[in-house]
Amino acid sequence: NKQVIFRDYITGFPKETDMVLTTETIKLKVPDGSKAILVKNLYLSCDPYMRSCMTKLDGKNYAPPFTPGSPITGLGVAKVLDSDHPNFKEGELVWGMTTWEEYSLITMPDGLFKIKDTDVPLSYYTGLLGMLGLTAYAGFYELCSPKKGENVFISAASGAVGQLVGQFAKITGCYVVGSAGSKVKVDLLKNKFGFDAAFNYKEEHDWDVALKRYFPEGIDIYFENVGGKMLDAVLLNMRVNGRISACGMISQYNLEEPEGVHNLFCLVTKKVRMEGFLATAYLHLLLKCFDFIMPLIKEGKITYVEDTVEGIDNAPGALVGLFTGRNVGKQPTEVEAI
Ligand code: NDP
Image (cartoon, rainbow, N blue to C red; front, top):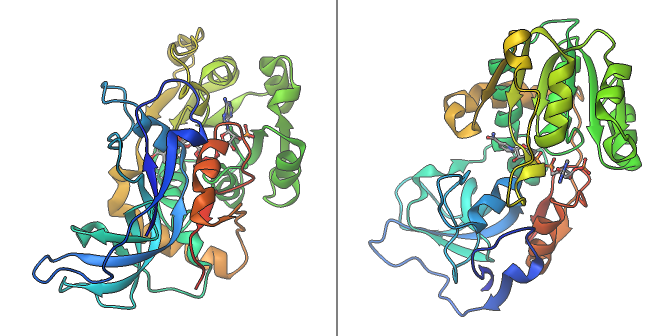
């Protein structure tokens, strides 16, 4: 059983060497009476929140820390090989929390979701048909109450969450602009996801000037994925009664000291509502969200770009690449295709 082991807690940017590949011999059988299930992992999700799990518990963690010396934990798609649990049968497909290894013994499988629709790529359950679909859905519709004609700005817009929010905003009839870190990503935003405009933030010297160019009348809704100086520039450009959905702040995750936001008082003067959220608080909407997204996929009304790497050996590199923008779209690791 090939595994990706978390070495030890880190500071700064994560490196591939923070994870070690090992192999162990296991029995492909669930112990009798254990109520556990044994799964073959098919897809492992690489997500920015996993950086927070690489830091010792300090009150600022975004999710519980990994255990040094144990396999990385994360969301994935898997097939049940053996079960001692009444709710799971051999051959069923599931998504939810698993471990970065070829085979996982899941001792508390009740939190897993069964996959019934298999006529879409199974990797979608690490993205738009899983927690990231819920993140985009709840963060945009529940927190921002978008209205037709409103001006929407999305940072890290070509990523797993951003590309969905942009397409939801277009379906709602909004004017949508995204920022991303390369020409390829900017082209995707404009030509594949239907954004009205997009810019490469790495090529703009002054983000306040760039935002004024795309939003001469200001921004009604900002879907925040990066934080730091981008948030500061956006605050200056928010319209009165604007909404900011604080989904993530990836530009801050590897810094020892957060970069200062100087324009926070704009929240007061412009009566802007900024609200942080975690998708896990909206699990009650998961089915509603699934029923909203699945027809959009099937009718070709939304598209989803993935940047799948093959082989569990490549999972550490894929995770680290999120923090340099190497991924173009959602980043899963394919352990084994079926
Ligand atoms: P992405 O697929 O967008 O991958 C991460 C991207 O972030 C990179 O490709 C890169 O794109 C961008 N990035 C990396 N470093 C920086 C930086 N220093 N400054 C600006 N951009 C950077 O990831 P997700 O869509 O999965 O996640 C997007 C955000 O949503 C993250 O902040 C994440 O933590 C958050 N999130 C929050 C959830 C919640 O429940 N609140 C759930 C899921 C995600 P580029 O090349 O464009 O810079």
